[in-house]
Amino acid sequence: MKVLVLPGDGIGPEIMEASLAVLKAADHRFALGLEYTHREVGLASLKKHGTSLPDDILPLARQMDGVLLGPMSNLEYPPPEEGGINFSAAFRTRLDLYANIRPARTRPDLPHRGTDMDLVIMRENTEGMYPDRNMAEGPGEFMPVEGVALSMRKITAAACERIARRSFELARKRRRKVTAVHKANAFQMTDGLFLKMVREVAKEFPDVEIEDVLIDAMAALLVRDASRYDVICTTNFYGDTLSDLASELSGSLGLAGSLNAGDDHAAAQAQHGSAPDIAGQDRANPSSMILSAAMLLSWYGERTGKDKFTAAASEIEAAVDKALSNAQTRTADLGGRLGTRAFAQKVVEALAG
View (cartoon, helix red, strand yellow):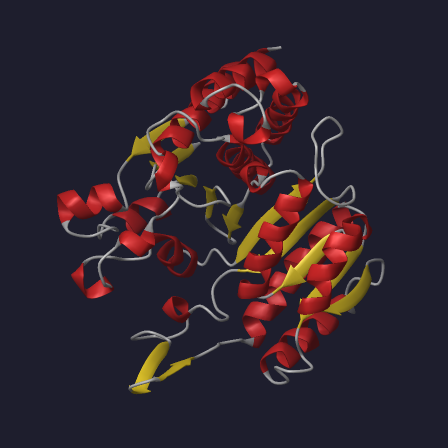
């Protein structure tokens, strides 16, 4: 399996190093044959090349079997015309990584807020409220006159259909329930189209329960009882918001794995941001990046029929759980004493058995 490694900004290099240490252990145990190509994006690339996303990165990614993508400090970037490109958005739109898969689950030995949960948020990843992925040319928000700002939202039947289909396919492997989250009572055309497409796809999956919930109610219901949900299908902005909420309720945003997947390509990227305030201090929790890397292995294994990759992914997840089960082997953000490297080493030891 050929993997492109892009550490990104802030704590990116540290959590990427930790993830690669775990992948090395998994490779040794399962003979995965992982081959890495290392490049830079983000602030490091901006300093060297004048752009946060060099022109050859995406073509290179298309040649790989998967990508490990670090976090992004895009608020520190100059305007796009000066090289400050949102590389996360570029990967999602130009590699057509239309499904952002974000699981959230509680762990028996780890404190959490609210109820137990084991759910997956399926977030449409290529359109919606985000102005950097809504137009063929130019941004999707503008200021026609001083003091008035407008933002465009794009929703297409094709994008809604495929994220709905992937959601029902996933639910069929789990507890057979899909919850479509929308705001069609207010956004009657855009969210109305999303809901229409989800319901049309649902007809092909009569064995899967379907319900729909308004986005504002959904936020409250996750806090009240997240255990009732299985697969949550929603549009880009709603999914971004709800996944952070669900992950924090499940224990911490730092535990949230995330995979950007399409039909032909996938990029693992931690759900959290770049945390520049703790960068370079060996304080970051690498769990999210490690679990995202495991999701990439699982995606590749399912796509190619190579069971050893899905087995390796399951064992990495179990090793992370084992490290988290002991308060003494957690990172500081979870009340433990370990730094980034030491926690990764505990995961490696658990993975080795």
